[in-house]
Length: 243
Ligand SMILES: C[S@@+](CC[C@H](N)C(=O)[O-])C[C@H]1O[C@@H](n2cnc3c(N)ncnc32)[C@H](O)[C@@H]1O
Image (cartoon, rainbow, N blue to C red):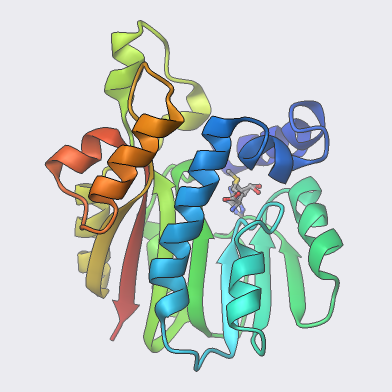
């Protein structure tokens, strides 16, 4: 699916499916979603918020309702934030939360977006999976990051076998997810270093149990992604540095 298709879908589902409260309906409406939220919170605290605070300019791709932007803002409170999102409806939700001071909003497809600035931190949660080609996105991130600075991407782990087992078709918009080992190859090729992958959200199939999901998260989330943890990883985080 191309970027214009994704834009249309997000502009529509914010209102139809998420009733203009994306954050609540995506992260808090059920105990299972809340468990996923807590996992993301921990993972972002453990990795993203641990980097040294000499951060003046932050770029976030696809902030949506600004759910994770709030955490970055609390930690890097002196920094300027540039938020790029293809969906006006999504970006409006962020604007409501943060206002204009220290935040700049760009309603644009990331690949079409132009800037003269460079950044001390790049962050993006659950957006990379919507780009048909990952290399142009990662190359752009490389050109926008300052030297010795980190980027973090959280993205869906393609667990397509779960669809196959249930005899379900993979929805078109979810067909572009990238496996961690393929993403690693691209990051290395582009020139990033210190690349590490960790589980971000873990779910055990079939049971839909908060208890089991938390159990596997507690068991695996401190360690880099491996062949066992990948089986239960719904979304992973990758940390990378531009030398
Ligand atoms: C699943 S939401 C994630 C929102 C938020 N980051 C979170 O984790 O809750 C994906 C977001 O990425 C945006 N997006 C998708 N494709 C994009 C593109 N090509 N350029 C900029 N933003 C994009 C969507 O509009 C949407 O706001």
